Length: 438
Image (cartoon, rainbow, N blue to C red; front, side):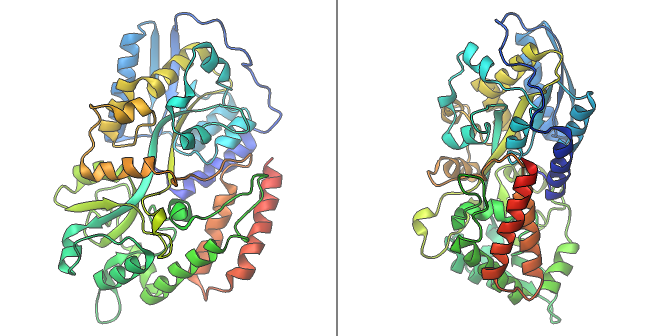
């Protein structure tokens, strides 16, 4: 599942202080290999039902490697992991929820370069789709391996759509706006009781990153400068959201969302029938079945601009990544654990079925053991779409995304202003942050 933006920001700040370019790389050449033995401290961010699935997968690894004892610490977000690594008391293996900081992990040497291990053990990287390979390496250095992927689409409440006369989800942004208005229920004073769609770009998983591929948004140039101000699709995306925010009334939306339940609890607004349509990840399928079994829901790709129907079906992909800490005391056993969890088909499929994340190897995606009901199949199809994309890595981590989020929040909350002036100014601030983060 994906983290809250505040956790990403905290992790980025810690990473900036903990790991800087020029750190000493501790493992240039992998040892000749042999039986993995000893203790491995493994930290991950999952909790509750999802943490139990990870424990089961690790138990299988330990049965296959009786000489290795894996000590698991669950519920550790990136900020905690990075703080521990910087203090010298971190784990041997860490599982991160963010691909946005892989550039900083690699360039700052927080995680070891895994290429010597991959080459020694003849691990075929072609088993991973190109997008997955792109978010586990930076400038030729592969310091991470993909655990499972998160793919984003549109969830819709079938009963609420049927009440309004709809039998299918929207495919275009015009359809989404029209349906959102028709599905919204208000009191006489304008107070929102049920929202057809919440257009705030900081609500739950509805963020610029997660809708970016639907609008074909460009983030960075090949030389890692901001591409936002020169991309007309950004202005179009902002206008669509601003028009719908204004239709609802910003204050009405603020009041409505302030009264909604936590995203990761059973009180999630979609679970409660308070929102008819929402952008979310594939993991929401499992949350709904576990926490809101009475909700009849469907899934689809995020709608696209009316003139871009050829792009419909694509979406945003990110994922969980694993690495060996630079100061690990047991890199050989740590690599063995990572290799098992990221290349073994049975392990990947088992985790995907339990957590309802998308597997990242071609063999796991094609496995007959993969449980793919129609709602989950939507995300497998999005994952396979040639226009599906992720946010580009860079040495400064997710700072460019955070600055963009700040601008978008301010734009939607006020009179709007002119993106023709605001976005080039955002470019300048992003470029300065990128320069400082190198």
